[in-house]
Amino acid sequence: MTLRARTLIVVIFATAISLMPHRVEAQAPAALDDPLRHGHALLIGTSTYKDPHWPPLDDVPLELEALRKGLHDHFDSVEVAINLETEKLRQRITDFLQSYGNDKDARLFIYYAGHGYTEDIGEQNERRGYITGIDTPWVDGTEQAYNAARPKALSMGAIRAPLEDARAKSILFVFDSCFAGTIFTDRSGGDPRPLSKETVARLTEKPARDFITAGRSDQRVPAHSPIPELLIAAINGAADRYQWGVISAVEIRGYMLDQIRNLDLTPQAGRLDNPAFAEGAFLFRVINPANRAPDENETIRLYRTAADKGDANAQVNLGFLYGTGGGGLPKNDREAARLFKLAADQGNANAQVNLGIFNEEGRGGLPKNDREAARLYKLAADQGNANAQVNLGAFYHEGSGGLPKDDREAARLYKLAADQGDADGQVNLGAFYHEGSGGLRADDREAARLFKLAADQGDAGGQVELGEFYRFGRGGVPKDDREAARLFKLAADQGDAAGQAALGDFYEFGRGGVPKDDREAARLFKLAADQGDADGQVNLGAFYQRGRGGLPKDDREAARLYKLAAKQGNVLAQFLLSFTPARGRPALR
Image 1 (cartoon, helix red, strand yellow):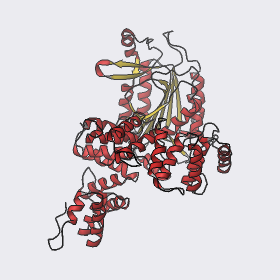
Image 2 (cartoon, one colour; image 1 turned 45 degrees about the horizontal axis):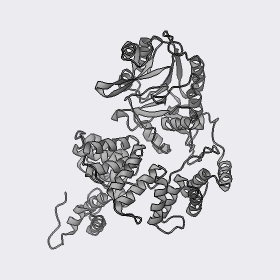
Image 3 (cartoon, helix red, strand yellow; image 1 turned 180 degrees about the vertical axis):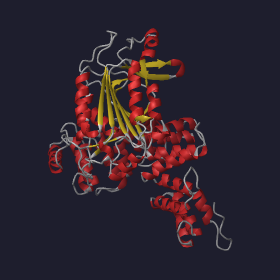
Image 4 (cartoon, helix red, strand yellow; image 1 turned 45 degrees about the vertical axis):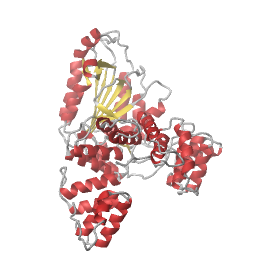
């Protein structure tokens, strides 16, 4: 099991100058037949309650009217329902899903504004979230109050069933209320994925059940909620940081969080905790770009002005753009390194990580210097930076950068990062639990839990490792080749070499519901081998040795690939190379 360290440059967005990175790929304007401009919306609000202990929410009717107008161009119909009793609330949601959800291509949006609450079910070790109707009794936290309210409130479990049963492809449910529950898997900590045309096409092919909530269970939405106004601004372009022309729930949540940091609210985003909805996403087309960021030249000018004045965040952002060739700037690693150093010298943790990566890789005119990289990672890790903790942990695991090989320290750092929701930290800590490394007791169940946390964030490493657990039935998960194949494909589609090699293996043998297809197996093995993956190299070598998958029979190429894999310690490759022509070739697989 390969431990993974983050090697991509991390960018933070400078709130001081209110700027965002810019255009990477502009999409064509939305046409009237654009599926992202069709569908149906239901807006539900509860503003007054029969029990006077519930505070009234007088702004809800006005907020729903503003939403109705703002969503007009995004859906074919927008329905509004206000102040329903709980049973009628349940029925209205069910009727909406039954009326429009039978269309397998339907795109449905449901918004609820009103009070919510959470009940701790101790005997089931569960936190159960509820939304309320006008007849829901006040909940004061006592068992008597929970018992009285339960029949008159709508639980997340009751909402889950019709969402799962509907044939509709994409559904987004926004709760302008706060509660906790297990209806969805949180992915708030995940980085938004680039929404290129290819990614959008892939996401819209698959079903989605996405959620946004205004905050956590321990928070309260103010009577005048900021969520409706921010939602409209988000889908009109304010959340489209990279100007893809398309946004998902993750971008909307991120934009909301940036705008309401002064309030005691932490918006959450997630999807239904069901593997059937793990690959899709509910998307909005940006068609009223009233809140776009400034044009590229003006934005870069403002970044540069702020960076010249010593603003560390601006230096990091401008360095990121130079390092990636983004924002219309030419790729210039030397300028990126200079800017990262200016910010790092001010103690900026993100800059320290980025400059550490440049030292580790020998970029930007810097000599390859693992000792300097380790020093910078430690500076950032000591500030609590999760990326630095993962990279420093990898150095301790490898004994790199002048550090002693110390798996216990690596495990400690991975746990710090994992506890912050960092997917790489979760994967690496999971690997330690699987292997019983770093002073940890071998525990495949804990490893599986950590791999799932990472996989649910879309992390390719987590998807591969969890796929292997399903492949062999480890860690309390059932042996399930179909689920393994699904996870390997998610990773392979992100370009992950281990995912490509594993998926190729399934195509070679026709496992996990994928057809037996030597050509596709060969293609995947080559993609993995070209990235230096030992399994991809040895499997591609075997195909060349036999002339399979549309490849010519070529013993020299097979031997070359075996040698590459053998140098990485691949036992099968070493075995294959041990045979001389006089002794004959070994039987392969």
